[in-house]
Length: 236
Image 1 (spheres, rainbow, N blue to C red):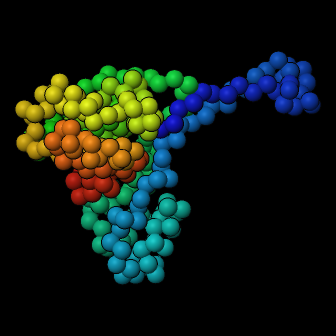
Image 2: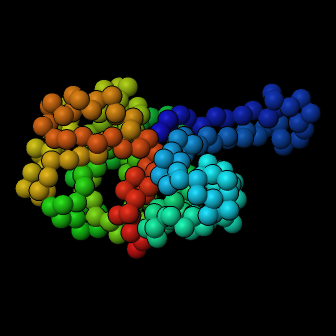
Image 3: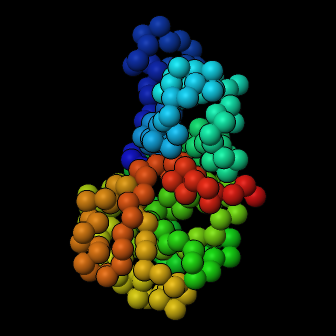
């Protein structure tokens, strides 16, 4: 999630034709954060059998139409289960589920540490993220679309979003190890599996070595999480 400041635009300088009160006005152009919706890989979650039962020649054409025409619903594909069709609906409309985020000049730290979503148990998956307040807001929005339980560990990345935290080295294998050890996780889960954001994929082997946990690389965009968890993304 790239964060930058808003831009203030001087009407008088920009438009020589500006008159009267316009000459004293400034327009604030608010830039929006890139939430990477365009990076959602919808195609890999389709059956890819090209069975034509949806009325299209192949799955790719079905997907292209579904992304441009809201009237075409995933349920048209007879090979998608109820839960998977629901996951597609959420991911296709992630830009509506997740609130628009303004680009910011500086990171905004949220509270680091472990949180529980939907009453997780020892078998629930563990997601790793950074403690950007904006990241926490975005994840909270997508979690409202399911009753699937999760543990989420927010590392102290000084408020950096994960894409920036990897660059600034505030999202690290040591940070994950410390986060796990400082939380109650070892006594709460019966597995040693974690899901890291796609932007941290380059750290996979290092995280495995440092933590001793198995590492799964999740999507770049949290709007893809419903598809990533597929059948388990159960409607509330």
